[in-house]
Image (tube, rainbow, N blue to C red; front, side, top):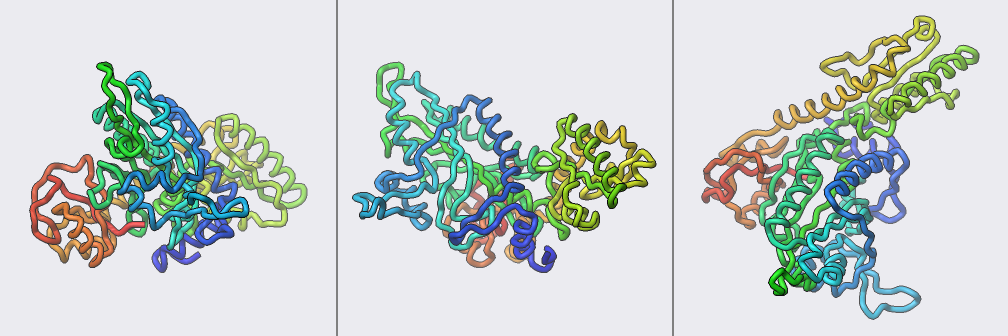
Length: 477
């Protein structure tokens, strides 16, 4: 593969294919998610779906085809999404009376049905979630990060007032931050978007932003407080306790297969993927070594060890059915595919009653390779995997801090965003944001929720800061 230092984009594009995560789809900008990549999504999906259900939400499924007129009801929404829409105008052998939009997001169609299902304050809050595919016509596609069609979850909720809706908005943001950190080992920064970066039709947009190993930012999940904008457009209203008709306050929030791309770019190296154990399809791979009788003996012992490891709740794969491939080839392959722990098992290992255990990366508590007694391997692996998960999060956090700096002058700002993130004051003007982007390709990524309160002047125009704290700027995917 192309080294990261030579061309990070080429490294990424080559790796996702070589590691058998995806293949390119038949339509420009689409992707086929292969079983290895889809298993990563399933692991992420299962954990996030559990959290969503535990918080009282119900899964539903809405149509992919949405009448074009629905989008026109909310002016900001249709303006924001118009360039990305894929529209069906011909079906069943004839032109349609009304064009149908392939959903880029589902606020409009779900808003239509919220209006039908909500009558009284007793119907609130209405907490819905959908696992679905969406279509956004992408001019510069990149697998997982920006594709014409992708998988995601989208939550849509309706509430009696702003306070309840804002609690929901922040719950979704906190949940996404926890999933990113705990599963993908991405140390995201959570906070609010500037007005110029808000979701089309939202009153407030919140985001989690992660730093990739080339210093760029990735928006990995968003949560939106929509106020009554969509309630007005779709007449989502309820009768309050006094019998008065009142508009509901709605939210929407989503996380997609983009998280997989973020995981790859946060941890990968020139050898290939580095998968956090909690999202690795195989947490452990056992490679038996030897030919003929020795090979059969090693394979039998590997299968026995694999069964013992599986009984510990660990996802393990025994690579014993490809005798035409050398052990060295298999070692390199599984290293490239990011398996956290590889176990090598040959004649000498078996005779010595040990297994050679190899971590994908050396960690603070363990070197890359060590020999462990065979009967002890299953019981030590859970702690090794947990330690590797923590190591990846700490390593990514250290990288982010090394590539983030407070800046006050324009020259320092332009130098900093060339390789990482700049924390700077900003006036809040969208026009000023546009000037910064035109000159540096950097955009305001997030107003960090946990940043200290500070006052200062805009790094670009010199006007007073609009946010009472520094904003993180960076180039983004």
